[in-house]
Structure formats: C-alpha cells, structure tokens
Length: 253
Image (cartoon, rainbow, N blue to C red; front, side):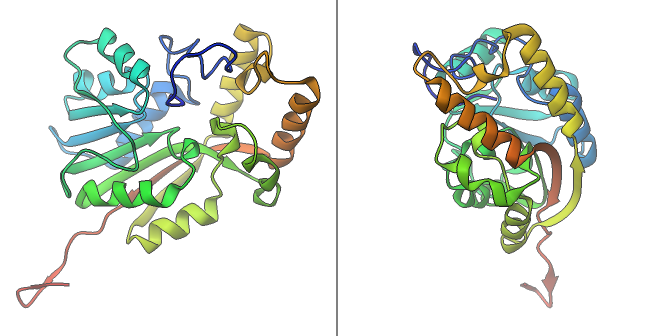
C-alpha cells in the first residue's frame, strides 16, 4: 500500500515510505490477502492483477506460492523499485489505477488492497476494474471504511492519506451494482486495523505520524484526530463477481 508520491522531507511517516520494505503496511497483511484469494476460488494459473502492490509481498505470494499468472502494479515508482528488489522476476508495472495498462477482459481476478481510499474519484477506477476483468472474473477489495458516514465531511478536505479517503459502504456497493457486479462477500476486519494501529504506535511512538509532519501545527493535528474519532474507521473485505455473458438464441444479452 503506497500513497503514490516520491519521498520528500516533511512528509508523514507513511508517505516517506518508512515501512515500505517491511511487512505490508495494511491491516491483516498477507493473511487477509490469503483470505481474499481463497474467497475468489480461482483456478490454477489464473491471471491476477495486484493493484497497489507496495513492496511486493502480496504479489510475490500470488506469483511464487500460489503460481498465479500475476502482475503487480503501483502508482509509486519507489514502491515498484522496492518490489523489484524483493524479486527481480516479479512482473511489476508502474501505472495509475484509473488508467490500467491492460486489455479489456484480460484478467480472471483483480485484488485492490488499500487502493480505493487513496483515489479521489473512485468511479473511474471501479469502471477500469470492471473493464479489465473477464466475464465471471472476481474483484477483491480490502480497505478502510467509515462506520459513521455522516461524519466524513470534515475529513475530505484534509490531507490525502488513506484515513481521509475512507469508503462509505452504501456508495461503494451502489456503484458496483451499477457497473453490473454481484456482491458476494462483505466481511468486517476492523480488528486487523486495530492491530496495525497498535503496531504503528509501538514502533513509531505515535499514531499521529501517519498524518502529521514537521509542518503540521498542533491545533491541526488535534482537529484531524477528533475528526477521525468521529468517523469511526473500520476495515473490510469485499468480493464481487462480474457476471458471465449470457447467450440466448445466438445473441449476447
């Protein structure tokens, strides 16, 4: 999971990539990846796109352990370099999730872990996910969501890290249905988020380092903290199907 911007001074601990070469900086880590893929029930050799691949641990797991025809993708050039350092043979592409460099109906599954919450306009990205999936393809999303959608307005105008782009469940489900997806699974994994927060605080000393830098004023930091508490962050796993193309009397419906 990466923010998709180069390492610079005065950025947050997350944006600076301080954890980039460690285990995945996302709730549930590889265990939740494993759960998502199991729910997708893919055949051997399936083409799987791993969006927001970060340091490449998930891509490596899909490619080496499960032997899927996997391509990892991330917007951040530094993340792509990190993935290649992990395994030079990993197929890694540096690209934007709203403009995927893949042919239509070319993937059996697409997994997006901590990706949508980093995208301002989620509809074009979801439309791209739909475009590249084959009929019958599986979409697996793990990400942050708000358990108090009415409290999100205060966060949308703040800094762009995943906690400020938390997903509203009704909006996501409505857009997926509009695109023709059938939502098969929604699981709450907020405990995994709590575990990651505890780990971050233990290693970094403060959770505020996720959204503050040396440029952040104490008053602004407190406002962000209060707004986050009001929004009640959670974490979810969603699996959806792209329906098969039905044929009736020789014509596609």
